[in-house]
Image (cartoon, rainbow, N blue to C red; front, side):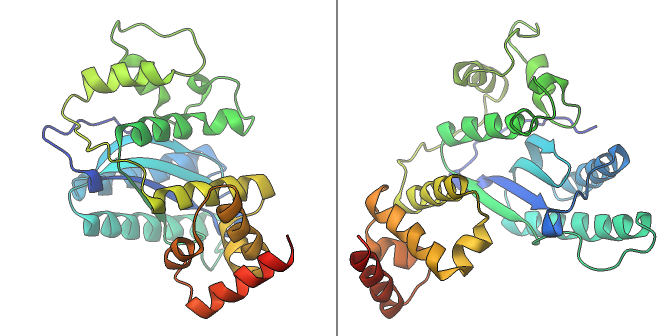
Length: 258
């Protein structure tokens, strides 16, 4: 099983990433225990090969989360390519010659830029099986790093609460991960937009692809960012890589349907 690693030097803001992989069409590609074990074996092997540190992880039935540290972004790309290609071959073979894509995308990665974001990401990863209704307590789930954190509690005692509080994680990180240094930069516009998109997707119960590909939903998303999150059209346009004309059409639709 994977162990949670330390990094014995200063880490800059671009070194931590929240990585997500998901089965194509939300297929349960990790449904069986042997599947989860095989994926973790590959992760362990290739993260070591490319000198990638695992801070937190959780393997669900149809997706997986990792909080990682790496000095070289290209190493993350190489590792994920090797891991997912080999797992796809394994999975298709175990499914009696199944053919085709196994993962929805190559992978999704988000940079972690502050200590607050770092802690919240760990909590989010560990809460996945609880929010999915698989277990009632994080510690009851076998395929996550939650119990590694419990074991690293300062008193070396299991905590009674179901999930560590923010201060609990801060204590562990400050005392166990003492070499992690963050710039703790203020949330920039891109981060606010990402948070807004996440809120919108959750509220509407849709996926990211649907939000970006369906014009009516995209208009509602931009309206939400403008009216609720107070993001200017020009900022959203740049983030979504839209042309000026495209954004002007969207803004006109929003004004007409107030």
